Image (cartoon, rainbow, N blue to C red; front, side, top):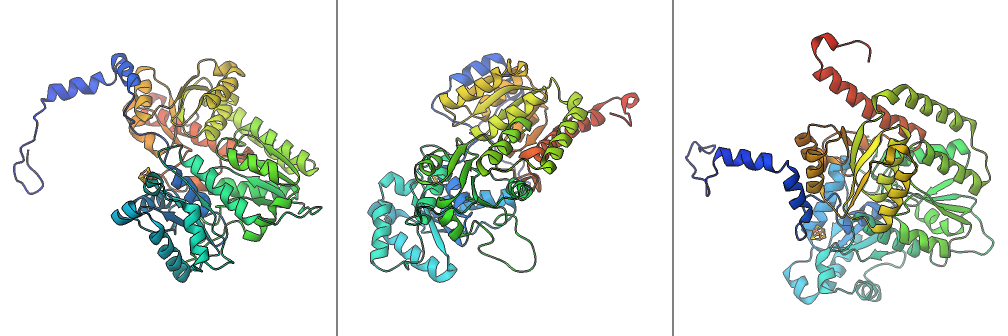
Length: 489
Ligand code: SF4
């Protein structure tokens, strides 16, 4: 074998072509699938990321908030580059870059120096601090370190410093998101509760959601209702800011005073029953007004439930404009149902999104077949099963908790489906299985602008439907015989 300089390179081990072919075929078999599912110690391509990445997403989502990673520089680069590649926008964050001496003596000096530097250089209104694996493993005491920084006068009183322990060997990005959001709200609302005061506003906790279009859609729905809403963790302008020649380190985000006053809100809705569970529990115990945690509004039924919940909590009728929108979405679904009805899908992702995808597919008469969640739980499985049981199209669905995309590959190769729903990481197994990948998850690195296209609400249902059905139609056009290449489909 010659390398790119034309020099002969001797492989360390010679593998005969027949052996490569034998193994390539064997990994597609039932026998291999059984062995694959016995795997315990090794995880291959799990469809989740680590806690601090979720923490960083929500740390960006407040006005003037600078995400601060207490830990390794390399980890910080990973979170930033993942967000940056998904949104194709900068993800300005800092790290106190702990190295070997920090690992031995603790990272307090790094944290203090980092705080001084970032305040001097980037002038944040808030510094949202979270951890990578290293300080968690050595047991850094974040509470004491930050208190000491305050006592030393390194952080001015007017700059809040919410912080969260986000150990990556436990949980996933949704748990980091939840922990950081909880700390931000606890910090900003401290001593802000006023007896008898009501902002008259609806607080919305979106949960981990990396679709900026969804956030704009929530705001549009509030406007249709004629209500004022406060999104607690608003990434819409942060990760979808205009290109107008001015670089803004802090573009958009929930205003800090509005977040602080949210504790006096009229009502609070959480759309992340799984990805903001702890935050919602705390909100329920501390916030004024009524509270409700409902599923992400994906598909018709869940959007209906969302709008009815807003109507009930805010005492406003559902606007005619949204009723008309519902009718258009149902019309679009009726027009397109023949292209998706009965088709089998494999899906993977976070619990909140999975429940939404399943609901949408069942409404279309499609079959959610292989359902995989790498950081699921028995409770998540139970909720998914109940959803599947509610529809004749859910009867074939099989749930795989704590499994990864290499397990999913075995499923696709031995028990095929028509399409795969998930994030970019699924493209390799989709290619092996010869099926399309519908990219509705996070992260999406290999397509443009999908994060700008909402998938929540009635408009989101139309968008998901169009993406799926038009892809199936593309495949028909690309693969059919000449005599079946028709104008009408
Ligand atoms: S899992 Fe731990 S070591 Fe790996 S990127 Fe996340 S924080 Fe860093």
